[in-house]
Image (tube, rainbow, N blue to C red):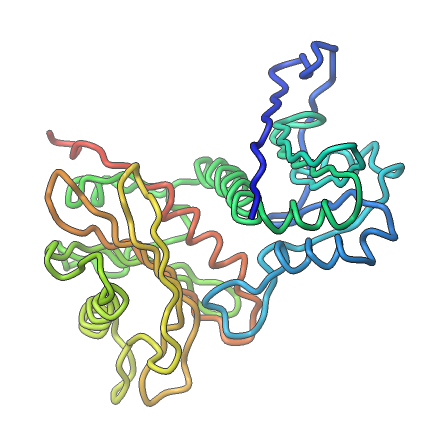
Length: 326
């Protein structure tokens, strides 16, 4: 597997990468939508299939298939005007050699463009496949940053969280504190038309989660013990991790610290209630423990991708800070 070094080109103010004046306007586009600039025959062939398999793959943790990104296709000669201001675009070009490059704010701001070029469809498709993790990370990071900027404008007061856990994070005011009498557990809840979105913050001892073959089962045990105790449900039910499908585990970074990222499905035992969750176990070096940041969606009849993405953006906005009274 050969990976290619990304060439990054950024338009600062009114200068392009070629030092030619450009007009950088506000970008356009819905969250998690990517404009794919590609010839029709390539979109309908191997290159298009590879792009769809990479960028439109199912979101981990959502039972009903939903794509990671929504893809729109446009021919290169039509990539102009308003379409050229799409916040995210993937452009396929023909060249003598294979190259993957990144352009930041080339036609609008904020904007991320990834250009994959090669001598033939096989080479381009292979380049997309080989670099899929980096491509996904770049688009995801860009969208998280954009979403955080939107949330910053309507942020909830989180001094209570800063004081108890030593972290700051950006939470929209649409959320409310649901567990007001528990000093060691933060539960935030947002009502949505189809149900609710929930966030949990708490700490556990370092020894409860180890970096080995038992990590997933340990994280499940932690979240089931805390969630089952703290999250109220109807009599006879228990809030827990869905037991049939093992959650997916990734190593990540949150607030500049090592973190385990777990994605899976929660359920209320003995009841027909379930949905996706994302959990970050973040190592807090200062306190030598695990800071648990989790969010989950309860919206049985709704598409959940963008709800789960908002939760990811909130949790990834976390940063370690001194408590307000320190």
